Amino acid sequence: MNQLAQLNNRIVNRVNANLAEFDFDTQSFVNNSLDHDKMLKFYAFYGITSRHPLYFHFKKSNIAGSYFLGKCYVGRSAIYKSDVRGDELKREGDTILGAKNIPLVDDEMIVIRDSLLYKTLVHSNSHNPESPEEFGIRNTIAAHYVNIHGSTCEGCFLGPFATVDLMNLHSCIVGEFSYVQVGELFHRKVDPGTVWIKNQNFEFKYKFQKEVLDHYAGVNALYQPRGIIYDFVKEREQDYEKLFDVMNLEPIYAPASSAVNRYAVTQGKTRIGENVLVSQRAFLENAVMGDGSNAQENSFIIDSTLHGLNVTAHGGKIIHADVGRGSFVGFNSFLNGKAKAPIEIGEDCIVMPHTIIDAEVQIKIPDEHLVWGFIGSASDIENHSISLDDLAAIRESLTMGKMTFMGKGSVFIEAFRKRINQILSTNGALFQDGETRGHAQDDQNISFNLIQPYSTGELKGLYPSIRIKP
Image 1 (cartoon, rainbow, N blue to C red):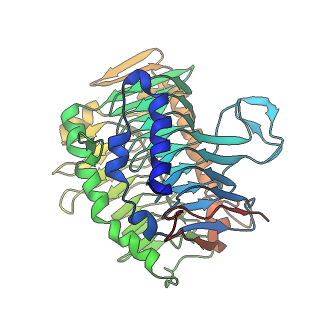
Image 2 (image 1 turned 45 degrees about the vertical axis):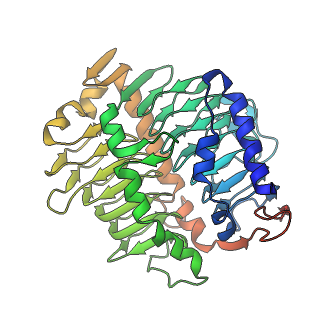
């Protein structure tokens, strides 16, 4: 058995040991996901800028097709076509959010050990007071297009298209296409298609019907993804691979205040406004990116217009849509408009993470509305959207269709708006006269360095152990 196979088996055994109480075996997922030949084919790459602390340490791992930025350590892990983006890690002297008495004594680092990340995004910074200098992922398997956003994970399995956001998980299973932001979970199994946000002030919960989930983002018996959303992504995968086949590309025109990553796909009549950030593995085709808008990793903006100050979170997909100024489209959402049945999102709207809009008629969401769940017809809008003013008036509870909300609506909206503004600021959308720099300005001059694995011998498939320091 070669070193790469041993690596995969070791990861499976460690994760299975953590999930033994669920009688859950990750072996079938790994065996049917990883193609060892492909893990030899793609190089890995890391970015260097003058504005991010430099430290990379890769040891006894395969990191094929993956991208790293910021301080990262990867040990005894398989990271396949994933993005480990540490440009928002906390710095020495910063404090944990909500824990002002815990200042960092060193820069925070992303540390991945004994884990398998398959086409996964890792981003932001952790909120774990137990390890403030370390954003840790251990003994964890993350399936296709998972978002691990500021969440530490120990001994977990995250199903395809799942998102874990700003929390800590211990020995948990998160089902496919679930979005979870609940602070901390221990030994829990989250059902597929669950959208769950909870803190001391409110709780929002929605669960997709099984037939809808199976149609759009289900899994087969081997936990491999299937459905319309997976097919949509899969059909465009070759366009990304072309970016790896050539060293130099003619860059798309962008203003001096904007950044379009060299590993983003831009096709057709795409226009980039001021203060725009287009991250690696974003896909733009006939897209108009208004001033201050962004397209984050694994997002798709096709035949659509974003009017400005728009956040398209990781994995958001916008097709044949007109998105009003200041509106937010959440993680892994799927806004599938048609040429003859476009989607119109008003200004200052919040499209909740993992929302699906897919209808054969035009769908219009008025200004300042919150949208969630599945909208497959005009009549679905009634039970899957609410004006922000009406939600703000809620003091105790609200039930609309399969959505339940408990707590103060005004606090929920305030928290969302605060986070959206923070994202805009961090991404450089508010840059003006040299002030309020962000990623759109700082990421313009990234240099990319390539790493390749051993192609023969006992270490075939593993990458050389390497430490890169300033």
